[in-house]
Image (cartoon, rainbow, N blue to C red; front, side, top):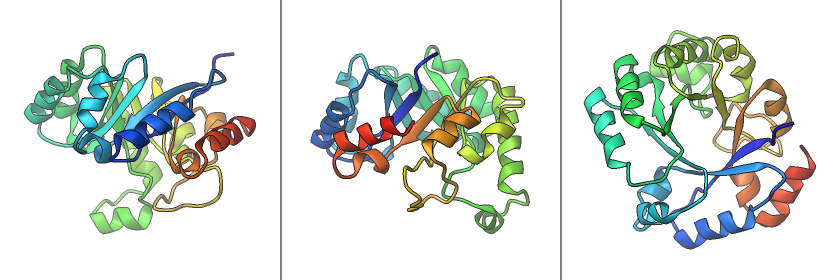
Length: 222
């Protein structure tokens, strides 16, 4: 049986903290990658640190959302980084998605569906007339049409989108305890894996407090 896979969210603006998270989450029991988002990438030494990382699965979660020429140009500017995955909002549109995918070469492009911080009420406020589940299905079909390598969706939509999106599914909103924080559509690790997720994205449940103890607790509960 293949190893379960997780991305540890390195949500910090300090290189020293990033090094500690990486050091304290080393394990051979599961496959571990590291997610770096806007906070770290925009920090003073963030990009420099990423450029020096070796032999790590790097998930650069920039959630690009712009016109086709801009996202394509952004991809070119990231070529010096040894990243494995890059995110783009599926709301960027089919042309932009295809442009990014064409420029990406061996970097996997993951389309972000509806953020886990949003629910049906939030979507209505924004101006969508679809429920979350319906919108995510629609977005996943767009990712398939654009021939993206993965999609990012909450655990609640996994089974639905797997009916037609056959590539990788990356699942944020993963919590060990029933604490939602700023995320509304959450799920336990064991349930997300059972639903068919390929990668879980886990941040505070592991990185807040004693990291070594948290990663051991996580592994013991799989």
